[in-house]
Image (tube, rainbow, N blue to C red):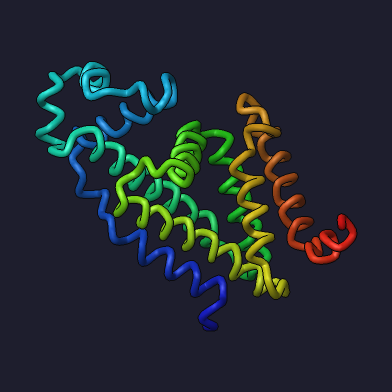
Length: 223
């Protein structure tokens, strides 16, 4: 197995994912994380306080600290990790049946697209990560962790693209990821499952078209 193959990139992603054992998490902690996500989606990230989280899970605010001693910052960090873990598990399940790079790429795109459209928290965390890149709102160690996750995810795309015959796909992958993360701008969130499948097909087609673009030629023509 080549070190740059999609199988190797998938293995590296899986190793990082297995560093967190969410099966051992107490139900109370997961309920708090879920409440935080829902409140942030409904009211905005900055509006969520320890008191509003406590009210949502029907406990007294001081009791939250028995689950998260470092308070809101710890809840934010654990929510990011939980979101990444759930996304990663779903991604690995989606690409498991792939027998070649083309099927692997298509499965990645479809999963990425459908989660962006169906799960509002995906857009919430994309916004949080983007905000951190501009204003550094996350703790330094968490920022490094997030950057690592993003890199491992994009390397899966890049490795599949190389296996498909595209020699230098890094810039193309960045454009594809940007397209998918903005899916709710061109795909309605209230679409039916059948409509979602057709839109996912469109996302795959667009992603393949982006891979085929010669950016150097486009830049030359534009100038």
